[in-house]
Image (cartoon, rainbow over all chains, first blue to last red; front, side):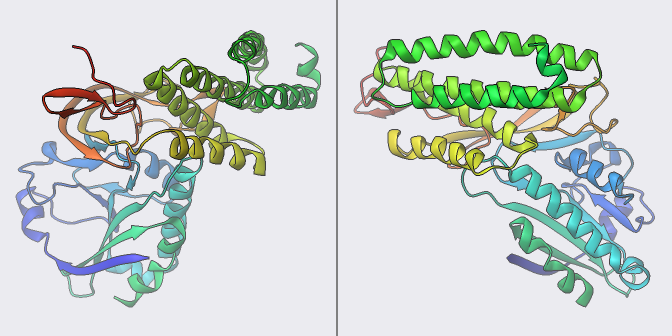
Length: 158
Length: 221
């Protein structure tokens, strides 16, 4: 498992996009820091399919700025997954949701790697909100489906 | 073929026999005419399977229709493998590569959807991977990045994301894909590990001459 942790600041970007708050679980667009309005927001293409896996397990994740219209497609063999924002309330009130989310993403990666040739990596970022409002820790993960499950402890420890 | 509607197990038995015969001919030493004949046999059988699949769909037997997809595409992958071997012997290297990639991709969809996870599945995929390493030089590929503006589901035609069909899964014997109708090209990059191995570097320039990467022959413009 390969992961990197850093603090990020998105409140200015949200203000520019006239977004007052985020729902507990939110897909974050790739260009959150450069988009001038919500119509310009570009989401990772795999969001379309991944969200169906979440819905099948009754996990509702909203996309920042409403229903996505633009998706970035990369024709690389690696799997690029959308960034997911996790609110601090989830960690406090419903921590089991983290393991459910990670299991769903893990199944998605497993299904997408099945029947392919060569070494492939999945890449995903989580924006985890800290207890102090507005503070966000970014966890950047690169690895296989199995390693993703180990992120649970790291996310919960933040 | 109608007998298989009552007993799909017989279909599996017939498939196993056909695959066994075809794979015995998938060696580079086997005569070209014998391999061509085998491809024709597979093609004829695929035509019959197509009718059977329609009948399963008509009767709302989705699992059976999906099974037919797996059987027809497993055989198609072997046909592409045979075609690759023929092309190699006919000194048509670019065509050989394309057929290998077709076999890999199509068999990948079978493994993703096969109701049976068998060692034979993995063995065949490994075999297709080994061809790539043993018969072809290291290749470089191009990867395209784009912003998708409009796309829809191949199964129901609804806008992507508006339905429950999952790309890469089977529905009524057909593979669900995303049909992109409007996209803006962002970048083209050189990669070693592409999603599409058809998209490869074809030639290099040496001393002002274009050289075919597979054959090292000069390409006549």
